[in-house]
Length: 156
Image 1 (tube, rainbow, N blue to C red):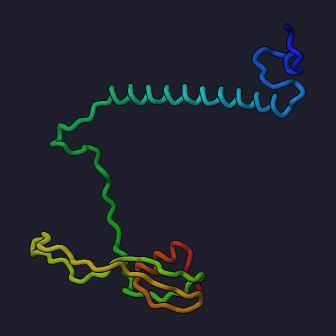
Image 2 (image 1 turned 90 degrees about the horizontal axis):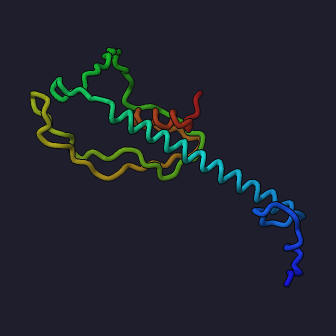
Image 3 (image 1 turned 90 degrees about the vertical axis):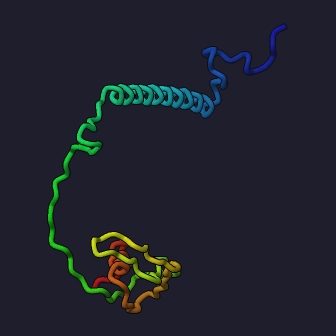
């Protein structure tokens, strides 16, 4: 018994699921096929990359004959230490509420005469700051430098 469905009467490729008059459906079907092909190609590329990385890892020899130390030496460049004041005065561009920066140091660390740590520092709670736009604040140098790096400080 022949079917009387309008879909059965369409002529087109056997793998076309949408009727030819449905342009959006046909285009979507093409795009799905292209996407699937691109994903398959990407998967093949990733697999080839993984194989190449594995081959490189298997063929690489790490030399620890120098006592377990990496033999690649970094060049030491000596620079002058940057001397700056302990505090800085800033004026912020935007209001900042409840900004956390640093911790309270209750007791500094105890360091021996040969540079060894005898007792670690005792730290308190986190320090929070509130800044209003346009006001001047005297802050620790590190906090001011951090805010300047983020672009929150008005440079005048």
